[in-house]
Length: 343
Image (cartoon, rainbow, N blue to C red; front, side, top):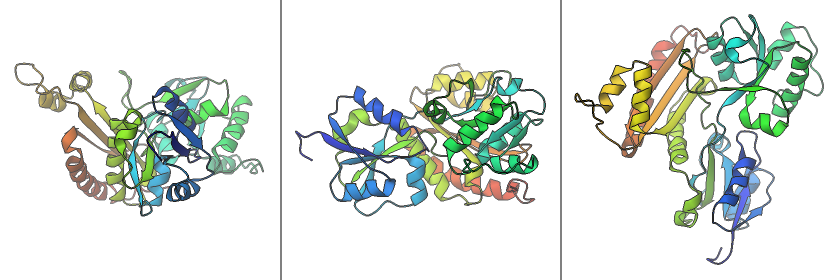
């Protein structure tokens, strides 16, 4: 790579994030680049090491599952967060589904969150649904393939065998169905109690380069909030028992103090409000805060362990480490009877 040559950028194929959409968004920044073809994350690493590409874009979740990066590679930054929510594909919104509605989801956390939101609903995995209905598994259905699940579930919905199914927002768009969908968001409506915290690393796409790659060369591409989300999620996940990682929701966002105060007043959260407002009703700070939320939902959705911390940006790592220790202790206390770890 020379100063005058366009950057070579590869993207590792994934279903974990909207990598295609994120890559298309790079056309809007003033950085010259050429796309390099790669068929997998490991192939992308090889091309980085061999100098066949300067940067590799990858879903944060895929990289996190690998553990440490290979020697000679580093996380350069992250792209803006996008499409971290799941969506319910159905004719009705979650709170308007018919009583005892049947809803399918591949994801364990989402199933638990839906049961919490609608205790009457029959929320099932594909395998459980086939067992309950005593239906033979179709050859076209692969439990690990999101697109085969989408096609199978849509057929069931069209035939009124189920009331809906839940998939990542970007998968709904890429599948090309013109169906109604309803976002399961992290912001609870005014008349609702429960929210749907995203999966760890949801919507995060990281940029990997060789050690020493100059960040200033791609500063227009980087997003500070997404980098914070990556770092906080990694600290929490690395200190977390592997048994609960796929049952935990984590939200990490940059928030303005004014926004936090309005939410605190709506939720009657006096503790948060009093931290940000002095006795005279004035803001104690105008600096961006980091909102960190984490929750573990029981199998039936009738119990939740949750914690929240609001940190100053410069103190995020320290606050997260303390939160991680406190979370571990809270989970140990809350799971003594095993109800949070049942399958």
